[in-house]
View (cartoon, helix red, strand yellow):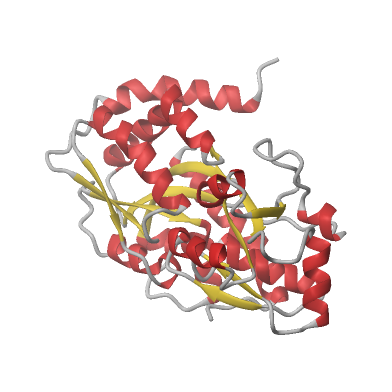
Length: 321
């Protein structure tokens, strides 16, 4: 039986060769990442870019522009020349959540060019092993007993970690304090030390610490368990919260009005890179699953995600603070 994903992969393979043979950059290409080094977005971008530069024939330099939940990188991309030498790895925070929660100086779909999705991201809800909670139900009970005292860290305002905590507050009837960081790498230091009580963070940043016993995974914020840690329950299972789910994903974007030959070339190179067995294996180690798309599919996906999350964000009371 041929699956929809298989058909999509076949179609992308068919267009890869001609697209890769078209636009040829003459200078190195920068890819902005809106978070500090060491986080899931940074790891994803560096892993894929390493293979893309061989396909395109120019160095691809990953440049971290942390701040404002990814908005600084977005603004830098919006204001960059539309010549293909500046790109951005966007996230659910920068492309969907931030426009809902705050007034931006730009419109995501009008002032940026969609190129294609890169990966879907596995997250885990974690605590330091010194914390007394063995299960998510324990943590929720402690939060109910001491409203406004437990804190959760995230890699930035508007990301999956931020919304995941806000949604947990709303659905479990608890009140916790959000502590935003400028990226996943910085967040982990304070989780390990116990400075913040818990976090919903990417597998790329927490899995090595879970495996080493330096962090304890209490739950997965998805509708299904993760193959990386199959014994860890979902949030819905662990806290009896049916319907709780916070997905996470990244996508490549360019400046406004990026010419179609450039869009097609970058899209083909990114999709080809993610089909490389070594790249796919390295991504999988960090809980990152390739999710290639066409530019048009990404545009529709961003619109659908915005429609999905707007009422949830408003109901949860999440904002840019």
